[in-house]
Length: 548
Image (cartoon, rainbow, N blue to C red; front, side):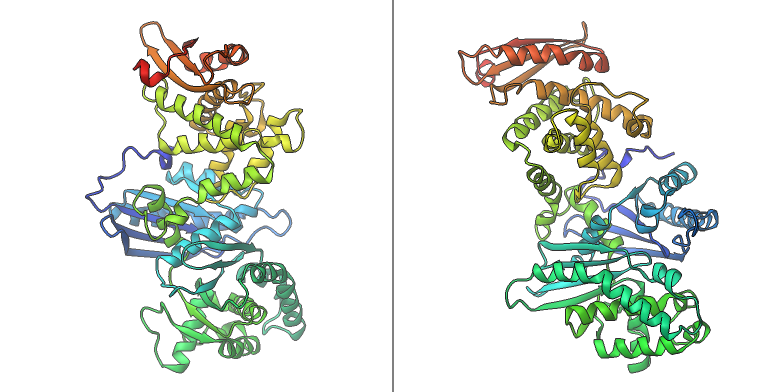
């Protein structure tokens, strides 16, 4: 089985002189998609060497319980097995997989992801709607030049539709709305051909669901700003193929950059509505499975273009899967120029949430500095975590006190809830869970099996939470008065006696830092128990750089 935290380990990455092969899998509501790419670090860029797609209809959920059905899960696991075999036959260094709306919304979604890991060894990241939108944006950026113009990106999936506003650097607006081709077909279409009554109801529902995100997107536009429209996903690719066959007699390869007018889409929607499902399947460019859901998907696009007041859409063949690759490259240092703004998405998102909950950032940054210093100085002696875990510790340190926004009483528990349900972009669901748990245990009780959220973590994830929260406890104690009394710290580990000597330098030489030392001694038992060491703290008024 693949290590649950394998994606956090970066010390074993391929040498930058080589071209690693990476596989990205998107487990959607309608289909499982995979691309296998070869990364060229010298450009930096990637080339797609294989694609795999299978319609699994994971979104065919039990209407009574809302659970993913056994049949849908079995179809998906079988498709993932084929993806796994293909990726490994191509010597893929790593498989990065994400699941979206169908799994996100199902009550048994997490159990399904555990099945995948147990049966295939693939660790699937469950991502939020906004995170899905951000990665779609990255994918589009990797395949299209915006020509210094702002663009709206629309991605119509099986369970959700993402609307994004960007200008080739900043994603200025991200949204995910619960309208998708599969979802709406299941909920609204019962007749074949589609009755006028169902058409009217479906159109009204789409307009109602899109009203808020469209208005919010428009409010993000600058005065007089002109925008283009880029479309991704199977629905829009199918519409482009149908359009090309009717206008050109063939489907261009690639379709990337293909354009359609709103009037052409309106005509296709009208045609789909008048045909039975079997007749739609006979249209060149429409597959059997796509014929079932193409009307709902194309109507979403038509209504979105109408509400946005946009006449032309340009197809981009890159979307979420390519965005997964770009995000991986950003996280592992392959990209540092064109997409540098996106590479800072995690830190910007954390600071935004901290400000939202009126966190004392000056104090939090002191805590983060101490926590990361302790992490670095005890690495390879007391723990073996890497840079990805260090990033989680930083986020938890900045946000550990955000629960004070609700109440001082049990604020560590409030911090868990606020972090867990915050829109922290750039993080997966499991990373959010880990950050929230680390922050939750910065005070009071240490992690216990009876704590529900902690108990649901894997053994390795529990170890991560225990060790990093123990480090965070010490860091919090070092700024007890929240005045930055301690300027720096130095750790010396004695392996023979399992002792960690902590030398603290006060900012003011006449400050005895008695409250910080008391707090440190009060909080250190959890750290000592976790790392099986004895902690001895000493106030050293000589600046550490002079002492060394």
